[in-house]
Length: 289
Image 1 (cartoon, rainbow, N blue to C red):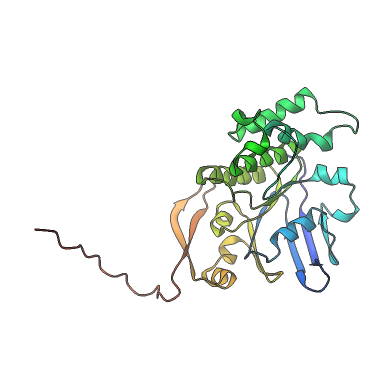
Image 2: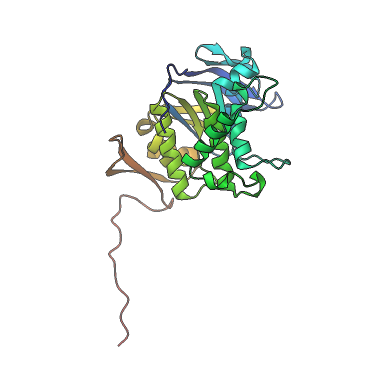
């Protein structure tokens, strides 16, 4: 589903500092640069500031210090309408008290492109229905959003973001509620959208996902970026073990993805197990005679 863009803006985060109560910093001097057409994956323990950073990029939170620029323009200086045409957001969850259908939710992505006193056109609704189809949930178009499963809601929110046609996508754990098959489809879609020129910043708890679709990875710990760069350089045994507090071993497989990149897997091992010792020989239980 690659969508070619004439020019896709990059995202620059420079010296960003944010505190909810101005006493305990949630983010401290965070700087990142994501080029147009790149996927940057944010990883870190719960509460380390991933969602807060995404909300600062979206302009939903105002930083105490530092700036966020998209295509060289300060996010804080953009009007709400212009920002909505530039950046689309897929949150972790969303609830609504209104009886919106899955199609209604997807059509909401057209709001920045519709005149203030107008309503989405039939063409807008057909476009939204087409995106739902391509995400595999076209059959849910008429279902109430509130009646959908967590994974189905997440796909509907992803559809809304695609219908918005913004060159920058901000994804907050987009596969968290999805089964394995749909999670892989979303990761492939993310990769495909980046090939089409979109700039994507996504948070995830799965280092494997950064290997699968990321051009860059950034590790957040204690509100600071402790490492950033290509996933193969950042997602090492040492970095991941320190980040999550459990022993993690990164394995390079012989399998390559559709882009020819070597695929990796991250394995958690017992802290007291020496990985350099040979595995015990397999023995079979004696058979009954």
